[in-house]
Length: 92
Image (cartoon, rainbow, N blue to C red; front, side, top):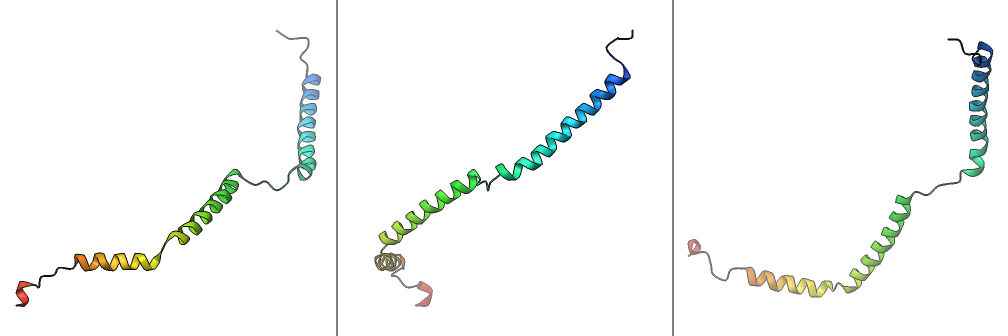
């Protein structure tokens, strides 16, 4: 069956119109992109900046709270308590 609305001229025209539309869309995208595309900051980068800020606050708070002299004294006292007071029987 031959359709009356389908002929080579209509197919040829439809092909070139479609090709023209695709080309026009591509050119429009190329021309519009520089105007609309600013520097994009990713969500990962924004979250990383927030994490770094929190980490810096935590590090500052911990360094203020940590008394290194008291820690050294406590470690030395624990080390003395763990050292055996008896001598080795083989050394007698």
